[in-house]
Image (tube, rainbow, N blue to C red; front, side, top):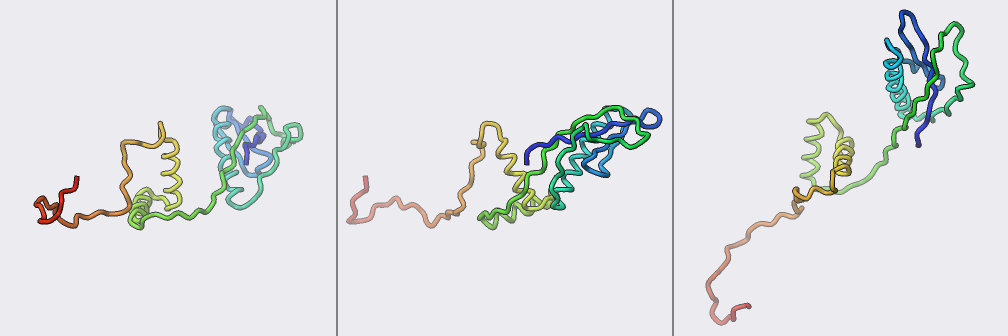
Length: 165
């Protein structure tokens, strides 16, 4: 989904405080001692409200045009303002094949960080995609196959064999 702009109403409250609410999200309110604080908190409240709607499977409402907003009787409207919000990107299930030992290490590290395996993959992928200059050349990737020494090198000559050149 692309960014949406939702209108908010900034009201003056008692003792110089300010409150903000969103006509399209009932119950989504915020307050502060200054206009700036109320607006900042309103932005955060809207982001949380949008996350909640999407997580519950609800379609986001169309933004109400400012000229159609009807403030409650007795409210002291200071201003209308718009808040842009980028709805969360939906998740998609993918299958990946990784060595079991790597999955074990990933699960252990994810648990240490208080994350799920999926969250860890998303976090690690984001870091890799944002890595400056692309792939970190100084960190070689170890091969998945293990090589073991099977014997000593023989230096003596075998009778009847020609040396390989």
